Length: 503
Image (tube, rainbow, N blue to C red; front, side, top):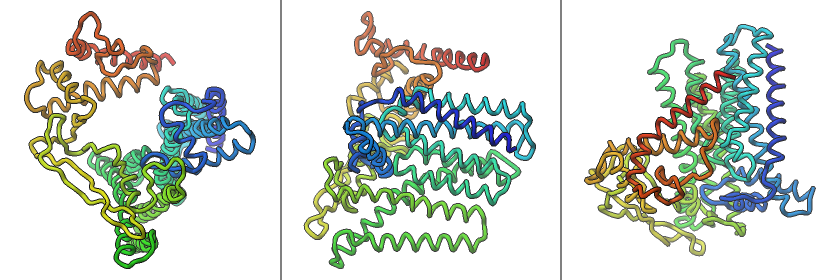
């Protein structure tokens, strides 16, 4: 086991240094497109970036910017340093994937208890090397590794979460293993200060706990474990990210407007209430003397503590930095900021289709700071739709940018006409043909097969950058796409499988 551990460490370091060397030579030397300039500026002076904020990212980014100022007088090196931070994070990601692969490979090859042979170690080492480097140089990962965006650091936190959870699953001693599980969930909570991607790993972590804690495995048990993982996502989203600021907002209104105390005084009872709830939860878990409950309670407390990185957003917003998106300097402005309300809302569970017309408007009062009090200064408007115009898991509810007309083209291409109210049938067709087959599979295969060309286009039929070929209408092109897209995808997948077998 020691020889495998030593080899695993060596392989991980090789992956790290190889990937970082390549990233260092390919990383952007200044700013790049999209939000990178904003994030670089935000990290440089601890400024407030767009919702829902990235407190931990700007804190760590500020350290890299400071190093750039220490070692160079060239302002462009500040951007280079923060871009290099992404390269470093992605190199750690690749290393973690290599180690995770080796652990799962060992479990599949010999199990937890049986020792590996020299041949086993070599096979596992090469498996980790391939997995780590394949991760490092896949298109999506490499793209984010060379620019100052949140995705590289977020991917690192996701890999750290997976690696530490796998470490828990891999170890035999429960006393030692449980520490890794708590670490996994704490890292998951820390990732909220960068991006919400990592919390999607919670169902996978719940499965690892289920398969380790229980000897008899059933589909029902696995689904229940995944449901608990989804409950963990809901806990972080509703009770931590939104719940704690909502509590602060309510305490702020009570203590400032009713008791006449200064602005921000509501944070004191908020912290006391959160600490009290944490104490009660930990005491209950100890009284139950159940290991799973204890781990869940400790992890919930750690996740809540990890969320405190959002404090840098509020503090810097009150400093009135040049980049101060939405100015979330108090409890009233922080909640819409965290809820990303400026982007609008799109239903995930139940919502209207693209052709639905609102039947009413719901108005919600919004408080804002007026002097030393909070007064109603605005209203939030939400459309209300009839139940007949709603569907389960709506994928066709996007109504801006001319989407209704485009949906009608799709419906006519797929079904022959676009008359009548769109139903679940077209909802599923759009999900499968466009979102999964055209968008997901195409992007996924870019990482392992390559891009067909440099012209992405905007729609499946837009194969010439917006000009229809030979008088073919969008509907005719969509019909051709419907016939050819899936075979093309299957062809790419078969090519990838052939390459894997050849290797």
